[in-house]
Image (tube, rainbow, N blue to C red; front, top):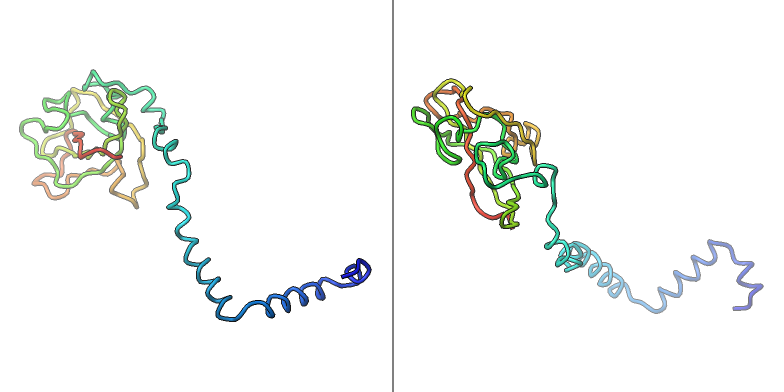
Length: 183
């Protein structure tokens, strides 16, 4: 098309020419098949292996994970305690994963994902309250909030007293049990 004719066409004219050209060279079924292919392929884009090796090797470091230690289970910065809120059972006569004598573990728990700096893996941790006696004041009281969610997402909220289903709703301390690797 000569330049003067191109300049004299309006936007509507260009759109009409383009639409007529597509209509001459493509069938309705062909266009529908192409639209269906695009619509079906769009959800698959997140599954493509785009820089996954780089993402897998880079461990996200929260402020807690950057300073976590693996030696002292009675300190609030012990790596398993990244999302714990309350008294540590390890300082109240129990252990990291056992309740003190005279208390009972709650059947429910909240969860967190903690990074172990010793083996550089992340683990799924179930935090379970021990119930049945007054709160243990002898030990450490920790408030760590890695991954803590609001109370409308209770599975990862550490502000709830999780003594549901026990004979007594009195909170004593909290344990941190490894459920498995998070990778």
